[in-house]
Amino acid sequence: KAGVTQTPRYLIKTRGQQVTLSCSPISGHRSVSWYQQTPGQGLQFLFEYFSETQRNKGNFPGRFSGRQFSNSRSEMNVSTLELGDSALYLCASSFGGGSPSTDTQYFGPGTRLTVL
Amino acid sequence: AQSVAQPEDQVNVAEGNPLTVKCTYSVSGNPYLFWYVQYPNRGLQFLLKYITGDNLVKGSYGFEAEFNKSQTSFHLKKPSALVSDSALYFCAVRDLISSGSARQLTFGSGTQLTVLP
Image 1: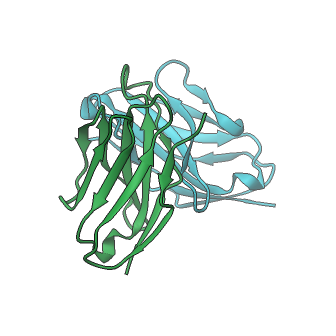
Image 2: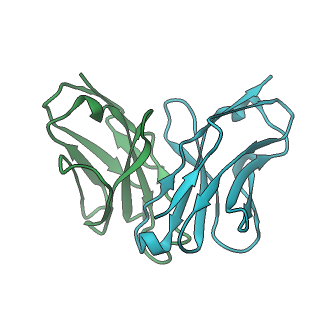
């Protein structure tokens, strides 16, 4: 079974631009979560989508947004990029339904975003 | 609020020796605990999880973790370390009271494990 895929793997943008990252979950998984990883702040939760609805959101400004499509693929968008947005953005998928206690998240390889 | 702490930024161990990577947690309800490993320029790879039941959880690649409720700990262990185990290890928790049906994980700061040949 194919794992979680993320595209692109690397991105270089300049301040003020916007960017869209894509995530394809494991087949059959309906929940997609996004995390930001930086050396200073570590791994921080951005948001989770399940059945095309945002189920939970972390403490990030409104410049960070996402969506999920009917095939469970997800995109996240960052507008008006700042230098501090440089990070590894990780996507994770899980079944999303049933018992949350047993639902394991599986991560993709990440998208490395560099903002100049 | 839920949280996890990894008190050691760096752990060094000789190949063939046992290794331990420490994790303590704080949750308001029953904890659901996970260990992930990250190799350079890669995403996180799931190792094992504790939901309920036996306090000793066995996972991938010979790793295991011991859940201790009284000490609120969930330490990762391996009887004999390999050089290829060198990586960044993360402990994570999900607390159903805080998270509800959401799948949000709260991660520790990570521990860099180096296995010396």
